[in-house]
Length: 188
Image 1 (cartoon, rainbow, N blue to C red):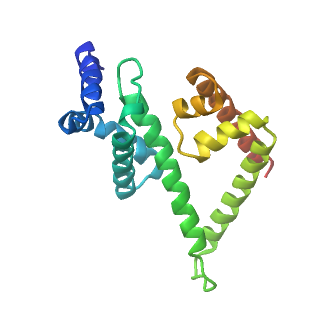
Image 2 (cartoon, rainbow, N blue to C red):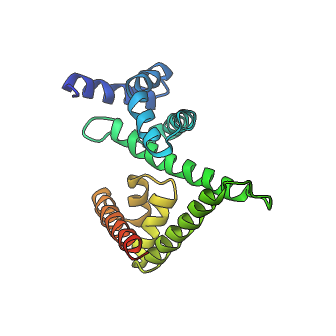
């Protein structure tokens, strides 16, 4: 549980880091590296990959430090959202690399990996179909925040809507996509 002192310290550290203070940024790193790591790990499920994602998140934070706005006086929500999307992107890249690395000589016992790939392709096709059925604004939002690396705030600015609109629309989109995937699994 955060105390008001910790929240105030977060804002103070962020302000100093935005002014170029590397020690303040190191303080933010020390304070938030563990939850960012665990957020990344919850997506990629590999300690090494989670460490890389965590590093990417803090590199991104440093590069975008002046654009970061604390949420309720804390940098953690921004970091966790960035960690989730960075991890999802890393996970997708790894899956793409793995699918491109398949060669003609399929080793024995690879039937289950082939089945997983076929199932993943079917799921991706269902997601693509569901996304194609969305309104153009929702398709763009999906493209920016789910497939892309935009934060809610960046997407809100790009689409000319509020942060809350982006958050609510994405929640509805995810709920709808989950329901569509559930119904697909039930019928197969």
